Image 1 (tube, chains in turn orange, green):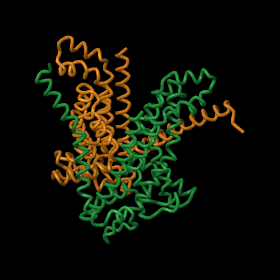
Image 2 (cartoon, rainbow over the protein chains, first blue to last red):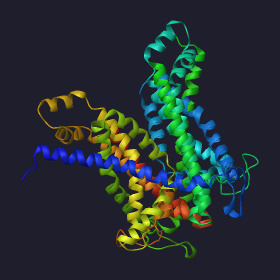
Image 3 (cartoon, rainbow over the protein chains, first blue to last red):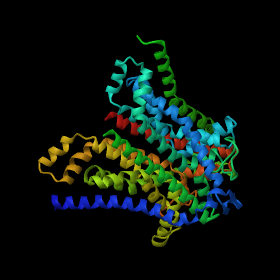
Image 4 (spheres, helix red, strand yellow):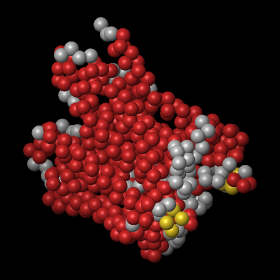
Length: 278
Length: 281
C-alpha cells in the first residue's frame, strides 16, 4: 500500500520540524548548562588573579591574556594575506589555472584538521624555526588555520560590490589600486570584518593546535616568546584531569560568553549595515 | 597600456595569493619528512595494518585506530546527516521568515562552540546515558558518534541549504503548479536536483568528523583495540596524536607524525572529492 500524498506530507513536515527543534534544543542545553554552572564561578578575583596550585584555586588571568595575544598575532598575520588573496582572485585575474590552484589550496587548508596544524606548527615553528612553545608559534599556526576563512569571506564580500563602483572609479581616472582601496574595499568592509570575527572565534575556541604549539604553561606571559595556556586549553586540562570542576566551569562559561558576544556583535553589525544600505 | 606600477601591484598580489599554496606545500613537506622514516622502517603494510601499538616495545601498528576513526565517522554520518538534511530543508523551504532569522545564527553558534565544550557536555550527559541504559563503559563509539554527529551539523546544513536555495525558482513553481504537494516537490525534484551539493556537504562533514580531536578524546575511552560493538571504547587517528604528542620523543614522536600522514592523506582525498563534485556542477 502506498502512503497517500497528504499523509506523507504530514509525516515529512513533522520530521523536519522535529529535527530543527532538536538541534535548537541541543544548542540551548549545552549553552545553558555551561552558563548556569559557570557564571557563579566568575568573579573579579577569578578574572584578575593568576591560576594557583595548577588551577585548583586562583583565577585565570594569565590564560585570558595568553588567549588574547595568540588571537591577536593570528589575526594580524592572517588578515593582510587573506584580503590580499581575495583581491587578487576578484580584481586582478579571470578564472584560470592559477586561480584554480589558489582556490584548491585554500579549500584544502580549510579542511585540514586542527591536530595536523598542531603537528605542523610543532615541527616547523617550535622545533625547526626554534621559536619554542610560545605565543608566536601558536599565533602563527593559528594564522594559517584561519587564512582560508578570511579569504573566503573577503572574496564573497568583494564579489558582491557592484561592478558599477569599479567602472565609475575608472571613468573618474582612478588607477586600479585607487579604485580598489577607495571604492571596492570600503563597501566590502562589513563582509571582511565578518570573516575576521569568525576567525577570532575560531582562535578562541581552538585547543588541539595551540596545545602543541603554545604549550600549557600557567604563568603570565611576558613577551610573544613566552609559552602560554589559552583558555580553551586550560578548560580542557582542568576538566580532563579533574583538577577543579568549579574553575573548569568558570573558564568554559567565559569562553561561551566571549563566543556569544562575537556572534551577537557580528549579527548586530550586519543588521546595522543592512539598515544603512536601505 | 598597463603602467609599470599596475603590473608591479598585480605581481605582488599574485605572490600574496600563492601564500596558500606555499603554506600547503610546507605543511605537506614537513609532516612527511618527519613521519616517513618510521613508516620506511616498520614497513607501510605493517604500519597501516599492524594490530599492535606499543611504542615502548617499538611496535607501531595503527589499524585499530583506522577502524576507530572510520567507525566513529560512519556513526557520526548516521546520526548527523538525516538531521542536517532535515534542518536544511526546514531552512530553505518550511521555516517562516522569522524563525529562519533565529535558526541561521543558531547554526552559526553551533559551529562556534569550542570542541572541548562538546566533549565536556558529552562526558556529562551522553556518556552516562549510554552507560545506564545500554551498558558498557559509556565511553564508546556511540558516544563519539553522537557528539560528532552534532558537531558536523553546521557544515552540512550550511552547504546543503545553499545548494537548495541555488536551484532555479521555476523548478518549484512548475512542480507546485502540477499539483504536487510541498514534500513531493522536495523529495522528487529539489533534493535530486541539489544532489551534488548535498554529497559535497556530506563529504566535507565526514572530513570534519574524522579530523576532530579534542571532543572525541573525552568521550571515546581511547583504548587501542578492535571494537566489537558500538558500545566499546576506541582510539582514533586524531586522538592517538592528541594523547601521546605531549610526552612522545624519538621514534615514538615520528610514529605520531606518521599517524598524521595517514590522517592527512584521508582528508586530502575527501577534500579533493568534495571539490571535484562541486566544480563539476
